[in-house]
Length: 320
Image (cartoon, rainbow, N blue to C red):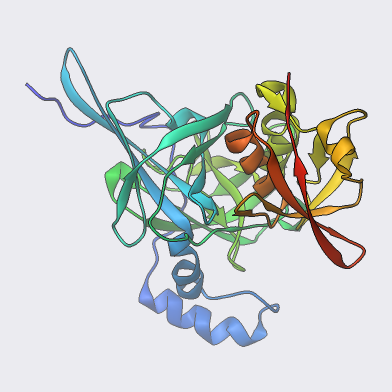
């Protein structure tokens, strides 16, 4: 007999908060004129961010029958790279990402960073470019700010909830603490947005020892995962020899290893990488995505911006 669907960390993980109503939306819209520049109403934030969020379903079976687990994620790059929680990436028979418009794709896990990072990168092959999130910065998060998550609670796609940030940093500086939370299984890995539509965290865990409390992986901790875990070239079979800034808004080269293929090809500290083969690079994490997924023994083309001009060079990776 098939049993009821089960959920990853079912009672412990998901998303945020207060139920949304049209009355609240009207009130928010009335207050918009007095809010700081860039701040949107709840309704506007959801409309803006909805295409950037995805729903994740894993279907498997065991000796008790078929089961399903649910999670969520956010689009990091238009080519199909998606950020989620590491604990969401279970092994099953089918691994499905569903976009906001209902289209769905099988995904593969590209890389994981466990422990305090609870971060993973999965990838789909979309038929057209996706709408990526804008990653914010943790130092802009303030106590009392409103936040929104888009999740997949109990397999209900694009579940939206709202809450209040109570502690901008906790868990040794890795997490954001949010109060008034109604956490449900299936929201894990879903994006946490501020009211400017920037992703400031992803859903991590419900705190059962406190009333309506949850904690979420801060965006800067995710950025550190790109710099300190995903971007470490000794994890790969081949190396280029470049480190990039993962905290800024562009892929600026911060280090070129001596004697590396990058140095031999003429890459310099301060160059900004804008293209990796046919992949557009708009930030340091974008470069790391390309690095973890594309570097083999074959030459790659890097387009660099230097002193106001652009040039494309060929770099031949070397085996580690």
